[in-house]
Amino acid sequence: MTRRSVRRLLTALGAAAVLAPASLAAQDHENLQVLPSDIPRPQLSAIMRGFTQALGVRCSTCHVGEEGQPLSTYDMASDDKPMKRKAREMLRMVQAINGEYLAELPDRGEPAVRVTCATCHGGLRRPEPLADVLTKVAMDDGGDAAAARYRELRAEYFGGRAYDFSSGSLTGAMEALVGEERGADAVALGRVALEFHGESTVVHTMMGQALEAAGDTEAAVAAYRQALELDPDNRAAQRRLEALGGG
Ligand code: HEC
Ligand code: HEC
Image 1 (cartoon, rainbow, N blue to C red):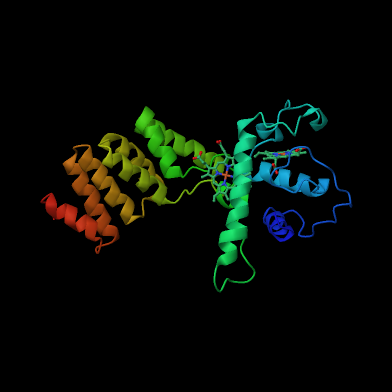
Image 2 (image 1 turned 30 degrees about the horizontal axis):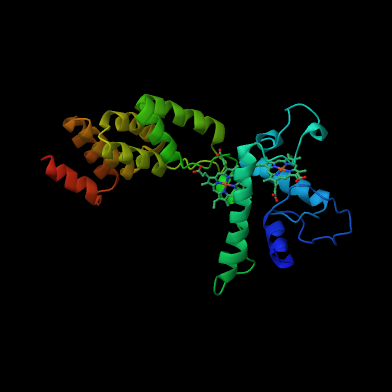
């Protein structure tokens, strides 16, 4: 790795832009394969603390050691924990994104925007889109379980960057469930969607589709009418109403 790409990586990771000369406070680490092995300890610590914040985890998530014991008892060099090996691949990925791909952007804006762990993780160990989380819970345990999960996640994470609580996550999951012929489960999520986003014509339209998939045509017609009340130009709702003979 060139000194310049090291600097880019460290800057992206929020660890002091200046790379101290190797002799200054340098600390030889045993098993650094991506970060420079002579990185000063304060910089390494800053990067590691950045990992814990970006992913909402502890040092012991990646390193061999016991929670509650002093860090000096940890074996930081060990690669035994799979999470550390995954994090190393992520480190390589972030380095490539900033150092190779973004660096090649023509007419790049100033100041350059850098990708960090938090860009994707936003405080989660595994940055899974909310629509996917809800779809999976609904497929495995049903729509009511998915609705309950939505409430739990919302109570814990609303206002942060971890999950997107806008209506799209719920309608996305509903659409996926309708595609899997799980209409009743989509309806269960639809009730939550209406509770939090009842002003959205899109949510009412999606609820109509879920109700149709669940075999409740009458309720579907009512949902499409509601969608059209909120937006008379809603073409999708118009078309479904006509198809159902309720226009
Ligand atoms: C998300 C996983 C992750 C978390 C959380 C994490 N680390 Fe690390 N740590 C790594 C990876 C990956 C490396 C190796 C980087 C490389 O190969 O360049 C590393 C390397 C280290 C090293 C150098 C070990 C050596 O001698 O090779 C130290 C020291 C360290 N971490 C301390 C910490 C501390 C202290 C914390 C908690 C504040 C922490 N780490 C949290 C993933 C993590
Ligand atoms: C471009 C987006 C992106 C960036 C940037 C990113 N990650 Fe990830 N990371 C992901 C995704 C997506 C997954 C889930 C992969 C999967 O399991 O399907 C993931 C998974 C992980 C995992 C495994 C989690 C698990 O439970 O299996 C770790 C650890 C991790 N990332 C650490 C990091 C660290 C540390 C950084 C910064 C150096 C980082 N990631 C930067 C997108 C990103």
